[in-house]
Length: 187
Image (cartoon, rainbow, N blue to C red; front, side, top):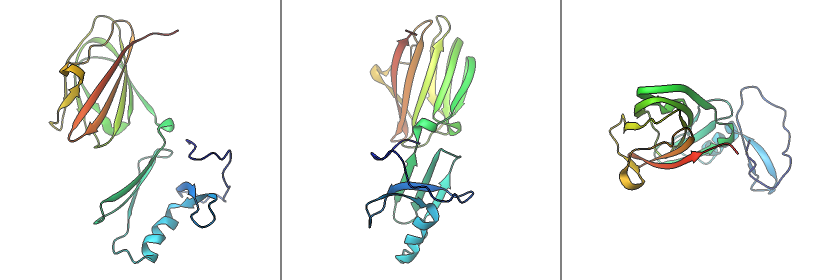
């Protein structure tokens, strides 16, 4: 888990099976502490807030979201260091990438591709680590939702030949801003 303070260690609580915790600073004692999600939810009840928050978690060590309907507030705690990497292997032709599977993807181009990205999440950041196994191109790229993909210069990604290329996509305002960093080689 990424560190969120200058502490080297955190208080140890007896683990309760199937319980999620947030690590933070206790407002009263100013000490770093662990807080069960259930305790945070109890604060809403104690303060007579009319609707209880919704707590969701995609997977272990991924993220927990707490949101409350009506207030439009959402807290998301993410640990990008623990994010699984989806290795799509060799790809060519028409390729559909389901972004609900994660945020990090690896592809090896073995032919020209036309890419469709689906199930993107507003505000999410996606990384695509692409190796072009020859002189291959991305012929088309789109969001299944119909949103635009914005790239510098308005060009399709152009992976360097026989090298690794990194693409970062950030979903904002119904579209994706795509940044290309190319021609990475081992040193």
